[in-house]
Amino acid sequence: MTTASSAVQTPTPFKPRIFSGIQPSGGLTLGNYLGALKRFVEKQDEGIETIYCMVDLHAITVWQDPEKLRYQTREGAAAFIAAGLDPARSILFNQSQVSAHAELAWIFNCVTRLGWMNRMTQFKDKTAGKNAEAASLGLYAYPSLMAADIMVYHATMVPVGEDQKQHLELTRDIAIKFNNDYGVDFFPVVEPLIEGAATRVMSLRDGTKKMSKSDPSDQSRINLTDSADNIAAKIRKAKTDPEPLPETVEGLKDRPEARNLVNIYAALAGHTVDQVIRDYAGAQFGTFKPALADLAVAKLSPITAEMNRLMADPGEIDRILGQGADRADAIAQPILERTKDIVGMIRSRKG
Ligand code: AMP
Ligand code: TRP
Image 1 (spheres, rainbow, N blue to C red):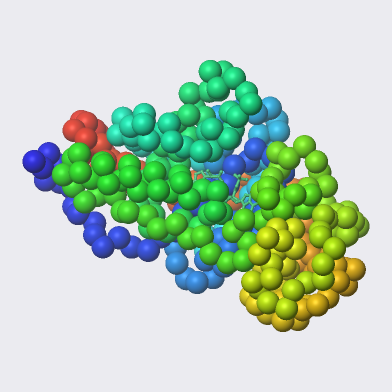
Image 2: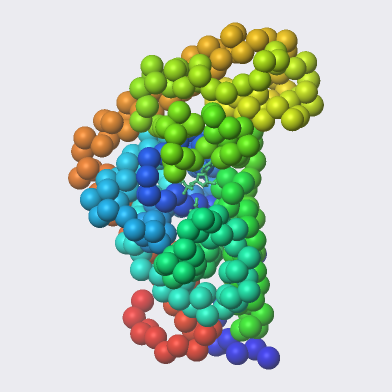
């Protein structure tokens, strides 16, 4: 049965369009840079339309201090620009400025099944060891809002780190169920882009844990705001095993800390892991760590300096986010309006 209004065009095949988001819920780490920012910027340079968002609606799924939220949203935008994002070529904005995200999320909340949400491991991780009954409803619905972020632009590709894979599978499920429920081919089935050596940057203290801004130990991570001395000291003190680097990539198996440092080197240098192993086969960490520290400082210091320069002028950042929001809104509104048509909502025919 097809219930879609005849006004609805079937927009297949979908135009290639990239969307991704970062939460402004704390400082950014080397994991965010290598797993997200750096790759996002590379996509812009591949000539595909790119839309990047500071997801403040997601951030408030756990309580945020209002002044910090504002600061961190600007800092995230500054990090994007410092990492090479060009606001003229990519769209950069904060989610709450484009109300279509929240509106489509509500419609998706009515498509998404509780059973699907109950399988989301990030919700389980974020409430592990805590009283899950006291978690916000927003934290539970988080993945449905994420699906709306992507679908409200008909985005076809989403670069993310490994940790977001399950949320993208859910996005596909929501899109497919919506299309089936309403007998349309309206939402694209999105492709996750999880590629490169650093889709999962691990803690410097424990090679089996993700590098994260929420780790209690500052030594476990490199922050994009760390000084050169601090970066070098953290790499020097990073946990390793006593063996030299292996002769082959297979030799990194079962050596999570060594593998992590080699992956970080490869991602920062823009080399393959193979290449790094070839260059450092048999090297002791006494040799490899200083080389990695020099490389990290060389790559990150200019970004930190540019972030600091941009943060000195918050008005300019707000202007860029506002212009980005206007451009994002122009794409999202017609897609939201067509969604409302499909669902059977009477809407204004203004625009
Ligand atoms: P978050 O800071 O958790 O909102 O993550 C923002 C983006 O950074 C997402 O695309 C994540 O997948 C990515 N990301 C966060 N931490 C890491 C990490 N340790 N390694 C690789 N990517 C990461
Ligand atoms: N959940 C993502 C994270 O923790 C952030 C995010 C929100 C996102 N909406 C998105 C990522 C849409 C990609 C696409 O990193």
